[in-house]
Length: 247
Ligand code: ADP
Ligand code: MG
Image (cartoon, rainbow, N blue to C red; front, side, top):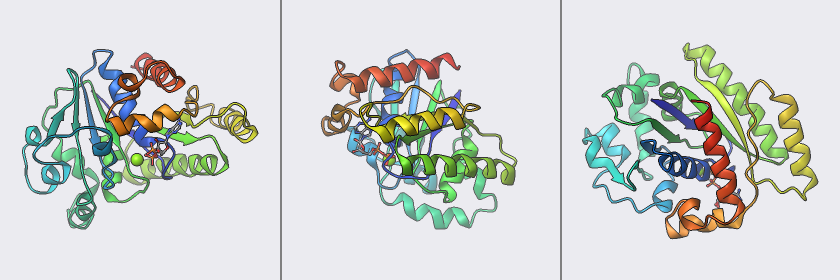
């Protein structure tokens, strides 16, 4: 089972868009996928019709059963959503003797999935740290602009420091350049620099700017259900194939 955290310390770089469309794309390749929303902003619920009685907070903090927290979205795609209440979990996790392994502990029972995709918030608070500890890979979506590049540097550094401090060996398996506009000089320069400076990591083909990616959540759909004809679907499909190639 591959457990992939979608993480960048910066907000608005395409983490949730990547988590949602990667999960949908993998499930369309016959992989059993569980998408977990760890961001108290609860953006995944905005992107999907979640109908589970309980959510991640209830599972982590109040002993709800996993199956009461899972919404079935498709043949191979399940989701655990969350809401603002998840932010309260931080204080309680801080009291745990082994807070770093909190999430691993709660998900220790055997899960029947090929992929767990964790949509992380842009911070390195305790819950997020325990998500990195639980994951075996990190995908870092990064906007192709100057601030995006800085956040990529910082995020990769944080992951290295995190591994050192915890003895964990989570691997930054790929950088996914997002919101790429080939007509824009800064986008091109940033992509060039990413490829030059981060060769040890895998810099994927960029996801182009595409307004369909903004529209899809309004209809509570992945880009593949919403509109397959545009670059957003092509680009994410290519990325899904790359993730599958690296199995
Ligand atoms: P994060 O989870 O990192 O905060 P989101 O995935 O929520 O970022 O993306 C931030 C905003 O940018 C959202 O409105 C989303 O629809 C939009 N967006 C993401 N990727 C693209 C893209 N390639 N082209 C156009 N808009 C995008
Ligand atoms: Mg998000």
